[in-house]
Image (cartoon, rainbow, N blue to C red):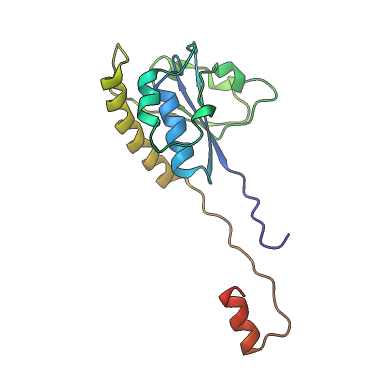
Length: 170
């Protein structure tokens, strides 16, 4: 196919303890802000039963693919069939202690130290949302790979009329 781009998206896994709020926010934000360049995933060391209501409250307006957000174990990303990650970003001190050798390939480890909170409620999740948004924006700016240049087919006999038609898209 002429003009088909085959660059693979970079895969990013966000880890936290329960995968109910912080890592869910990070996954949703990266997917929403630059899903063309990144595949975003999230997981937890001890996954919760469901996404925290305050996290869903932050995401319900203007976010697509909310049905994809559910707590899952980080072990799902270490099995032989799991996708190979390019980045693993930890969002709490507990998840920062995960043995990176468990992941396939050699993902780059990052740790985002967020304002700690012992309890998760609408206020703390709201504050974390803005911290994570800033980190995700910075991550995209630093790590987005440019698409390879699009090579247009060479036209053997190009008159000024046909070249104008090609450039105008007709």
